[in-house]
Amino acid sequence: QVQLVESGGGLVQAGGSLRLSCAASGSTFSIGVMGWYRQAPGKQREWVASISSEGNTHYLDSVKGRFTISRDNAKNTVYLQMNSLKPEDTAVYYCKARRWSFDYWGQGTQVTVSS
Image (cartoon, rainbow, N blue to C red; front, side, top):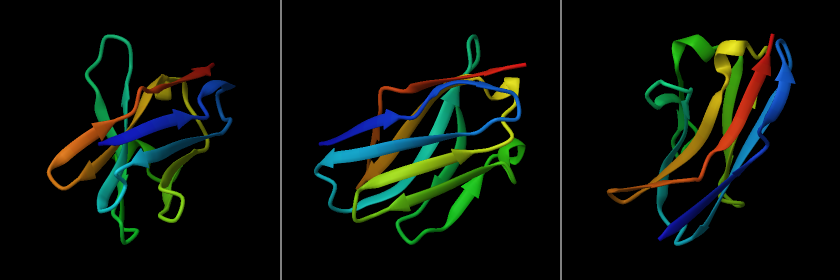
């Protein structure tokens, strides 16, 4: 089992920045891809960014150039640096980790961007 705990969400004005963290614990050996997803009210959860254990990254087009995903394998932690935030980035942000063929999710952290 892998437990994921997100932190770093909050309320920020448009144009501001936030840094989300997701710490993994439990059976962290062989965690592969880690990623961030978000779900806005009334919308489906969408993928935002992902990073492999080797550091290869991929981003949703709408966040490219504004968000940066990174990970510290020694600390079993993945980060999402979010700059130039827009009101449409408002959502609950979830961390996901894949270990073998299983996906593990965190409880989510709220990000609210005011205009």
